[in-house]
Length: 71
Image 1: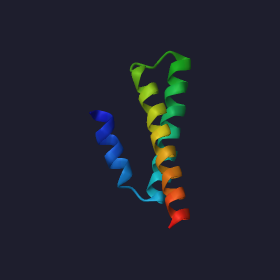
Image 2: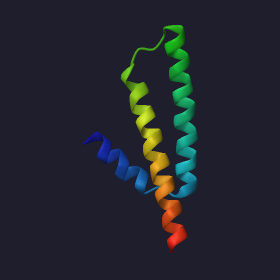
Image 3: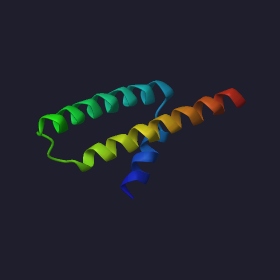
């Protein structure tokens, strides 16, 4: 249920907003990796959530690009 809510929130964003969201998620992913390497990572499940959110954003970006190309 949480991911469907997140997906509907992402679908409402414009392409520029999706790009900003992707940049923020990439920064968070880097920070989580750094925390993991230094042994400071507390919530290891967040790494997986961020990785999947990045995939969701990229999928929506691709879908919107194809939709604009068609119409």
